[in-house]
Length: 114
Length: 111
Image 1 (tube, chains in turn cyan, orange):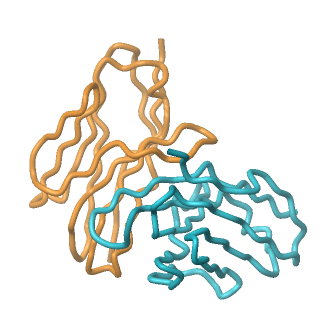
Image 2: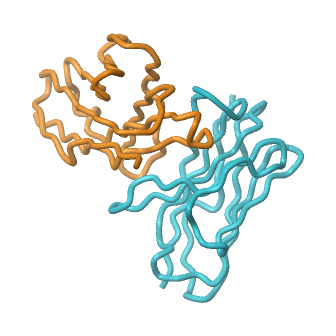
Image 3: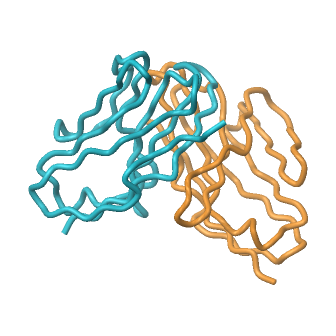
């Protein structure tokens, strides 16, 4: 069974640009979550999607957005990039949303904003 | 508030045993996860504790005490490949079903 796949793995963007990251969950998984990981802040929850609906949202500005497609694939977008957006962006999938579901992470997308 | 504390760094010797602690203060509790993350890689699932007590999985064991807001991950017969960051996360269904993550403990295993 293929794991969670994220693309691109590495990218460099300039301040003010926008970026779209893609995530394909494990086959059969309907819940997709996005996290930002930085050395000082650890894993910060961005949002969770289930059946194309946003279920939860973290404390990030509106520049961060996401969506989920009918095949459960998900994308997240960051507009007007800032230097502080440089981070590892992790996507995680689970069979469903709710209590105690183990989440499985992808390898992540390393974003550097210069 | 919601808070999870883990030691930032630990060092141990190959073949030894190490215990990584995690304490939490959260408004609710439904379970606690442990994940392992090697540098530059994705976090991988290690364990999920819901009830008090020790759960053993090979060289790794995880303990939970809900009354004390405390968990630990026990790694036995340490190997060099166990050098990684270990993340503790609390699931609180009352917190909009979000996971609350600790900052992780970076474990270095020396020969």
